[in-house]
Structures are given as C-alpha cells and as structure tokens.
Length: 131
Length: 117
Image 1: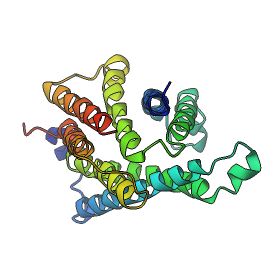
Image 2 (image 1 turned 90 degrees about the horizontal axis):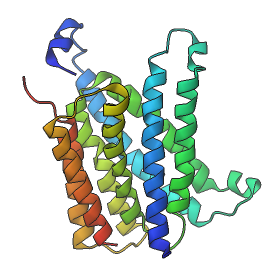
Image 3 (image 1 turned 45 degrees about the horizontal axis):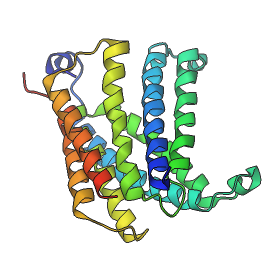
C-alpha cells in the first residue's frame, strides 16, 4: 500500500486504526490458543471419523483457527500492513511461551533467539518505507 | 528417519502447500463480485482445498510426544519465504532488498529454532 494510493480514498474512521490494531492483537492470542488446542487434539488422535468428531480440542482448535483467519482478513482490510505485520508475528511468541509453560517443552537459547529473529524478519518484510 | 526429521519434513511440506493455497486464494479473490456465486470459482476453491490439504500435513507433523510445538510451529514461518516466490512467479511482484532481508532473517530464525530442538 503506498501513501499516494491512500490519499485518494476517504480518510479512515478515527478509531479504525486502533480497532484493527486491537483486532489483530487478539488474533495473535487466539491463534496461539488454536495451535495449542490442535496440538493437544493431535496427541490424542485416533484415525476414525467418530473419534475425530468427538476430539474436542482438535475440533475447537480448528474452529478457532477458522474464525481467527476470518478476523485477520477483516483487520487487514482496514489496517496498514506495515503496522500489522509485526503484531501478527507475535503469534510465534505466544505459541512458544505457551509450549514452554503449558506443554512443558524445554526452553533454550537457540529457540528463543530463533523466535526473535523470525519476528524481526516478518516485521522487516511488512515494513513500509517512507517515500 | 528420526521422528523429529519426519515432523520437520511434514511441517515443511505443509508450509509449501499452504502458501500455494494462499496464492490461489489471491488469484480467486480477483474474481469476487457482489454475487455470492462468485465464491464458486475454480481458483478460490483450489486455494481452499490446498489450505485444508496443508493442514493435514501440519497436524500430522505436530502429532506425538517428540513433536515439540516450540520447534515446529516457528517453521510455519517458512510459508513467508515461499509466498515471496509465488508473488514473484504468479503476480510479478517486485523482490526488493528489504524483502530479501526479511526472508534471510526468517530463514536464520528457523535454523536457530531447529538447532534448539
């Protein structure tokens, strides 16, 4: 999105920016929750249709994932990509922290440096250069 | 093949298929009109199908005690790398230096996370 293009359209609602920020932020938390649910569900996976339908974490996880994707699309429609990209990358932070605390996975230096580097990379990709 | 390598390969495959799905969703979204029937277009449907297909690979990859979410979920970020490739191939989007730096950082981060497994 370039600034020359945005000047052509009507100015956004004053709260639109803040709202899409909050929406995307909630999406990152919900996204991480969905990952945790899917992981929990898959660890109890058995390959028959009835078992899958009654695998509550798995079904809840994928439902949340779907709702989350729709919310993200809505937020991205109104917000600036450069501002929202780094926030979206927070999903990696929450998922990793939840894996450490709730799933009891070991934390270590390489994983933590890796996450910070990935978040930085996503932020750089979405960064809008001033013209 | 070790369970970890198997998991990594599955998530890697999921990231390729998922990003391809995203590209088809974008192609399909260009055909959207006000009519709800415009949702039924081959590219959009293929995009959704690829998305669902990729989630099967992903879910299989993160299944099991040895499959650490703190290692495998960050590898989903590889999808950004393929996304850049599809953007260049299918939509002729410019590959800027900034995008390359972002891509390099993501790859480096995924390597670090892999080293932590």
